[in-house]
Amino acid sequence: MDAMTFKLENFEGPLDLLLALIQKHKMDLHDIPILELIDQYTALIEQYRAQRLDLASEFIEMAARLVEMKSYLLLPRSPEAERMKQELTGQLIEYELCKRMAATLGGMAAGTVIAVRRPEKVEQDMTYTLRHDPMILAEAWAGLMGKGASKRAPTTEKFEPIVTAPVVSVSSRVVHVLRGLVSGRLSRLRQLFLKTDSRSTTVATFLAVLELVRHGRLKIDDSEQLTVSRQHLHTSQEERNSEWT
Image (cartoon, rainbow, N blue to C red; front, top):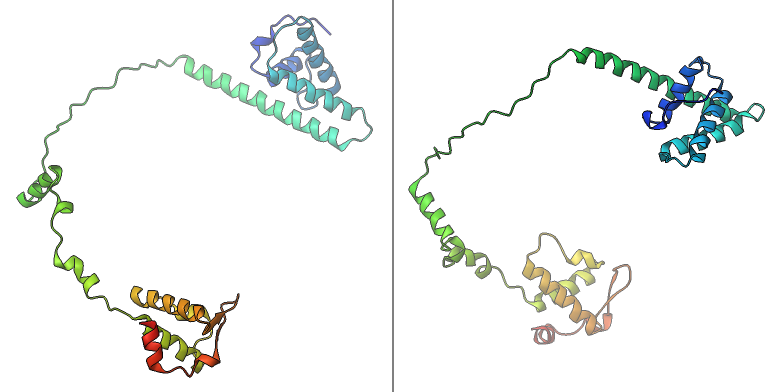
């Protein structure tokens, strides 16, 4: 192999170096003598390493890849060797086309003059042109001064949902649960809590279930199945009302 006189840092990457070797030795890019190219590349890399010159990691990685490819090429009828050869050939052909296109575009731009100037400063009119109702402006000013609506006295309309909410007693929900279980209308825990119920109804139902379980009148298994204790069903209504109110 002829001694190489160029410097490695003149090449943008390992594909650039491989393409230079192909052109130097007048190889056919579409039918590369791959073993010969591998030997030339690895010999050049070893020469630079022997001279203790710094090499970019991508050049060393390509050398390792080529050595692996050579090991497959030495095997008879290796499909992996053929795959790696086609892959490298395709990369070199694409890289050579890109270099040609870059040279063409560079030649087209060589005679073009590019002039750049500072962006023109645009004067902005900061005048506020919108018109608002004076009351809106007064409320905005009051808000800025800490006298906004958040500090105003609450109106009766805000308390109306709380004051007018129905109060549901726990005892009424106890009777509702027991009647539902005895009649067979209720059998599972989630049937007691409906999305349409009010918050007061839901809370009262929950407390009623807790009291029934605590007094042994109701049992709930792991599958949410409800079972009522028959021995407590004959308790008088008066006794229930006095116990749960």
